[in-house]
Amino acid sequence: MAEPPIDSDHGRALRTSSWEAILASQQKKVDLVVVLAAGEGTRMKSSLAKVLHPIAGKTVIHHVLEAVTPTSKEVSVVVGAHREEVEAHLSEIAPSAHRVHQAERNGTGHAVQLALADTNITGTVLVVAGDTPLLRTSTISEFIEAHEELESVASVLTAVLPDPFGYGRILRDDLGAVLRIVEERDADEDQKLVDEINTGVYLFDIETLREAAKNLTADNSQGELYLTDVIALVKASGKIAVAIQSNDFTETLGINDRSQLAQCAAIMRDRINDSHMLNGVSIIDPMTTWIDATVEIDTDVTIMPGSALHGKTKIASGALIGPRTTLTNVTIDRGAVVIESRVADSQIGAEASVGPFSFIRPGTQLASNSKVGAYVEIKNSSIGESSKVPHLSYVGDATIGEGTNIGAATIFVNYDGVEKHQTVVGDHVRVGSDTMLVAPVRIGDGAYTAAGSIITEDVPAGAIGVARAKQRNVLGWVLRRRSGTKSEQAARDAGATESTL
Image (cartoon, rainbow, N blue to C red; front, side, top):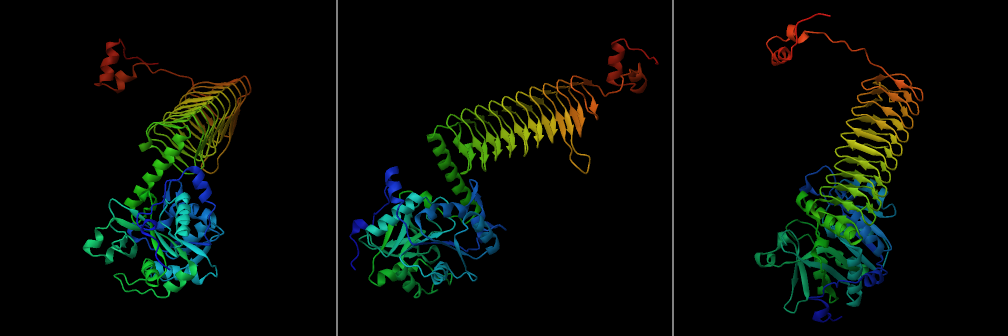
């Protein structure tokens, strides 16, 4: 079959689609996706598999699978290094994905040979690398559409990089038609000047790929079977093989080391932040704001600089977050404010306020209009509506009713060295400053505790708990015991004299 005209190959770039075009193109599906995730990832210098490193709340391979799954009828993942950990993760995020084990890592061509040997599927296969987390479903759909329009049996997605070092180069003839792909290690100096690179994303007719894969050889610097060589083999057989250029090179960036991981994370951060801002969220400094892909934010939320939102965090309209605040799996109701604090696995009620410099630990529930002030730590406790813990306090394993005020420097003594115990504080209670509530203990509705008390017994409703020794003053003590100090001189200047009780 004759090769398509030049404008169908060289210079063929995926268009920037409208949302309607994207939705339409997403209806196209290939018969199989093969995700290559067997590599050692030695340049990461990590005990964790490369594809399991997190970006924006999901692993690298999770992002890849989310992008490719909508475009395919079936998914196969080739695993190898860190097999047990990768397969365990796949069981959580993609239980229906088929796993193919590449025990001996002999190159991408070998990995695809194993994947094809493990299936009888015919039709079209999409092959992607498991370390390209920025790839979008819409781009894959357009790639499929272009592949079909060109009647190609082998297509490679390419990109033009400012710095192509480390990537395979796309070699074209004088008319711009693709000839072959040469890896960085095998390229000569002229070929290394080419800035169009192989993204590692391919579409093949499965039977054509099976036949070409049989003819792969390890005649290269790494002694491996390169999938990239299939393009030249298909061209040599007289069939159509094309290179289709992506219009956004950032989508196709791979990850080989921690620097590239950080680069991809920053791009993902910007992508997520832009999406939220377009949906009506005010992000004052997007460069210092990190939001996981799993976070949900309503309109008219304001996020101040230096904030990080993780996990299943949900923020309702009108909330103010930050600056310098970290939320992990937190539900924030409308109009709540969290300033310069850390909150995890908790619920913050409507119009409630937290911070600055507070630590809200898992299991905490703050009701509407409640307040947690500066330098307060709370864990596994519920704070009732309009109740306050304003300053310098620790609240653990407690239930606090409505309209109650916890005085500064109050400690809920919940741990006896073996077990945790509960403290229950009723409605409209006033706990005096520097009180210690030694659990298990109950403070009844409307009760008070005297400042500086150590409360070890229940305080009935309407009572005041006083648990402190009577004060006595030892006159002249400083003059006798701290002779020669500035304190002694100050006391004498104030008229103090030596005396005894």
